[in-house]
Length: 270
Ligand SMILES: [Zn+2]
Ligand SMILES: [Zn+2]
Image 1 (spheres, rainbow, N blue to C red):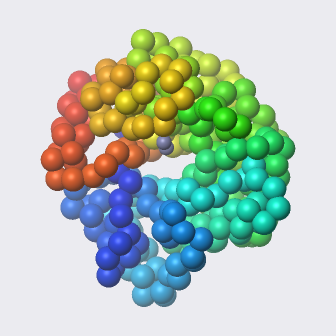
Image 2 (tube, rainbow, N blue to C red; image 1 turned 180 degrees about the vertical axis):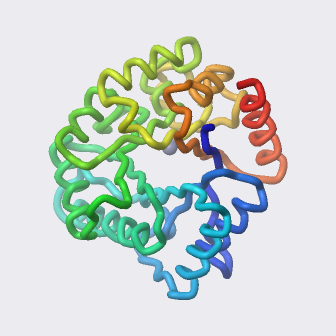
């Protein structure tokens, strides 16, 4: 069975532990969080009590798979001080994931030279002292500008001969020209040939406001964008049956109810 969940907020008194409570209350089987404000370099300390509460709640939930999304400010393709800050910020997220027992950390490759991105990701793993867990995933980009990782072949190059793995964002793939709407199986075949689907443990299951090849990174709710039913075939593809699917769309009670209704109807059809 695919695991599914939302990107949850850690704002509020309970911090990261509040996200586990919310996931459980919503009946999610996985979730994603930021470990700090995604638009600020300011680090966020985790108190021992917060860590303990997070671990205890997750254990009580049967160990919901969890993902930490790196800060949006991180650009591993940058040069100079921005690169150093990016690597340090990512290393901080990896350390926090290790402390919390979170399985995956997802980062956008950024823009610039692919060699720089690879070097930055590996340096962050070294700084954080990561051995096998958490797994660092590079996410495919929507393309445009100097963005690294819009093509599956480039992702394959980034992760080759490293412990890095890949997070597939369906909206980004569609915006980069992969036709997830008409040929979702074909897109997964292409990813399998390039990277190997066994190295894709997490999927960001977003529909797309922008059209095929538009390079517009604007997520839509399930069945409310240009991909539509194609996402069902990604979600239910037997090759991805035990993967973690995360929705990264704006939240609200109505939006949550809608997206959960769609996902659960799809699961029932399977
Ligand atoms: Zn994403
Ligand atoms: Zn996006």
